[in-house]
Length: 124
Image (cartoon, rainbow, N blue to C red; front, side, top):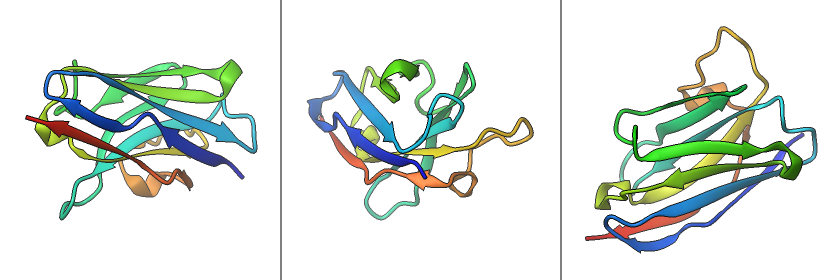
């Protein structure tokens, strides 16, 4: 079992930055794929980005603005969000799964473990 806890959300003005953290406990985290998703009110949960082994990929809407990194010594994955826009406002979740080379991890159904979410609000 893997337990995930997100933190770092908050209220920020458009153009600002936030760094979200996803801390894992329960098992060795370093080999797991970690993804970030978000869900705005009235909308479906959407893919933000994923780190699979040492490679990361992102949704077009955040590419060039968001960056995923991980610190295996701390069992933590980060989502650095720069140049935030009001449309980035959402509840942000991290998720984890064992890594399989054939899986892209762009879908929420690819993941086995989820955090509780952290709210990000970007004001205009």
